[in-house]
Amino acid sequence: MTRRRDECDRRRRRGPAETRWVSKGLGAVTWTILLFAPAVLFAQDGASRAAEETSIHGGWLVIAAYVILWLGLFAYVGYLGIRQRTLDEQIDDLERRIERSLSDIREEE
Amino acid sequence: MNRLVETGRLESAHAMQKLAEIVDRYFPWIVALGGLVFALALWLSFFYAPVDRNMGIVQKIFYSHVPAAMAAYAGFTVTSVASLLYLVKPHRNWDVAAVSGAHIGLFFCAYVLVSGPIWAYKAWGQAWVWDPQLTSTLVLFLLYGGYVLLRAFSKNSERMRKISAVLAVVAFVDIPIIHYSVKMWRGNHPTIEREGGGGLAPAMKTAFSTSMFAYLLLFALLLWLAVRVRRLEWRAEQLHVDLEDAERSRTD
Image (cartoon, rainbow over all chains, first blue to last red; front, top):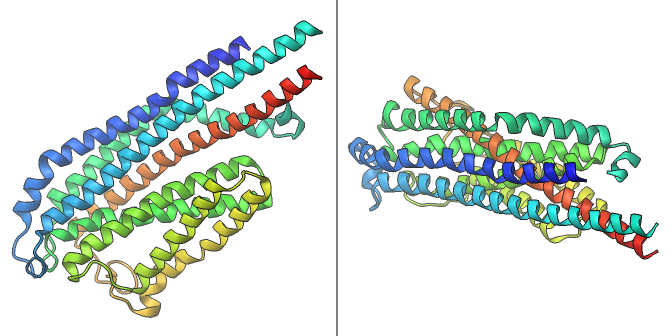
């Protein structure tokens, strides 16, 4: 049981770290986009047929498309991290309660 | 644990545990590789690939829209294959993979349905038209959205898992329909590489291929995280039953 609890603690420590790693990776890429993309997008957009048809600049639409993706990714990874932490705590608690019940049974016997 | 031994599933549980340990050990490296590939894909999309002469800068959405669509297909394929395997051999690992695949597929499919209209607003002058490919993609989103809602709000019984597995397998039929809808019904949706499209310039092709690889890697990472969470849910479920058993035997 002690080993199982140790394993549980290890898993709890390791679990959210994985989502943190993904968040770090996403964060690094997001900063790259935020720093460089707007300047590049607006500088590159030359005379285009499509650019004259609507009032919104194409660069803003590209930024909107990428921002939506990154916000969605952060939200999803964040949700998975929170859910994992909650479940780890729940499992830890359940294992402790089972251990207590089993030791009670052993004592009664 | 006793229940696993009784049902003869201990070996498969151990195999899954071993796989989880191996992936966990290399996880930071896989994420680092994913981050590098993603950064490269963005650099190629924005700096290396030329701006499209007709569509202008808005064509850059293509480098996230199409790979996201492929990631959505991959997610729904995982769901359908795992569901089929669950129907053949009802092991919870297949069910866990099916639900996780549906979540990730739905995420990317939602993005496809948002980024597509953003591009179309500029390219076609209106965000949404009832084009065959757009409509069938919306139908795909609704079908798998229905699957996810069914799983979220129904009792987690074997019967329910089998019913939703059938839905997931049937819904997969929509994917080839989406892919070949342009050829079959001639809609507005562009065909760049397939069904007689004009193809891409070499620089665009490089950016596109790298983006495709980056999104599929991202898909794999998200799928792994989602599978981990579902497995923990399953473990919590088992422990609830174990606790009930232990408390019942204590009162007896």
